[in-house]
Amino acid sequence: MRSTFTLAVFISLLATTADAQVWLELGLKGMMGFTGFYNKNIVDDSRHDSQLGLATSVGGVAAINIGEYHGLNIEALGATHHQSFTFRDNDGNNNAINMEWKSTDVYLLYRWYRDNGAFLEIGPKVTYIREAQQSYGTDWAKVTDEYADKYYSLAFGVGGFVSTSEVLTVKTGLRAEYALTDLISEKGQADGYPSPYAGFENYTETRPFRVGLYMEVTFGVGGIAQSMCGRRGFIFGTRYK
Image (cartoon, rainbow, N blue to C red; front, side):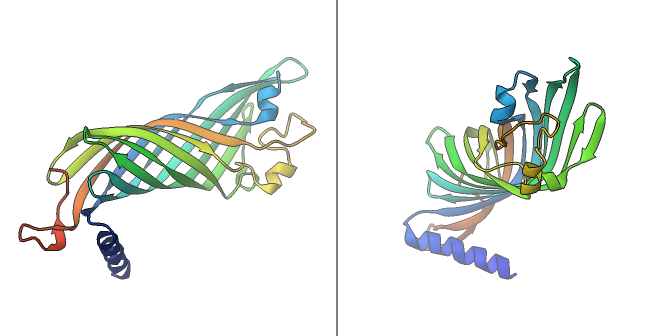
C-alpha cells in the first residue's frame, strides 16, 4: 500500500511539472543474445582463443511514459551469462575454459519515442551476481567469491512497436551493453581470474559486453491525463490508441 501511494505521488509530481500525459505500464520482458568480455591480457595473448557466448534474460518491466515522446523504463531481469574460450598450454593442448554467471540485472533507461513508433533508449544497468562457476577442461568449480558482487554497465538500444491496443502493447528491439566496472572481485584479482592458470605478470580488468534482441509486453495500468471535461485526473488503460 505504501509503495503504491509513493508511485501515485511520483506520477502526480511528473504531471504537475509538465503539461503532459503521464502513463504507467507494467509487463514482462525477455531478451536473448551474444555475450563476451574484454580483457587485455587475454586478447593480447596468442595462447588464448576467445568465442562469443549466449546470454538469456527474463523478468518484469515498469514503463512510465511522459507525453508522446519521452519515457522511463525500469526493468528487473533474471539473467544467465555464458562465455567460452580456449587456452593452449605448454604441451600444445587446447583446454576449454567456460564461464557462467547468474545475475539479477536492473535497468533504468530513458526512451525517446518517434511518431512512427520507433524509439531510442539509453541508461545505466546494475548486474548483481548471484552465482558463478568456471571450468578448466572438464573440471568445474564454484567461483562466486572470485567474481564481483555487482558491476555497472551502460546500455543503448533501438526498438519499435509491434502492436498496440487499449490494453496491451508489444515492443521489440535491439540492445547493446558494455560494462564500466570489473567483473572480478578483489579476491579474484589476487588469484589471477578469469585466467589463474596463465600466469600473467600484471592484472587487467574484465569488462563484459552483450548484444541482444528483446520482446516486451506491457499492460496499460493508467495515468494522469486530461479527460473529456477538461480536468486532469487518473484514467485507467493506456495512452496508445
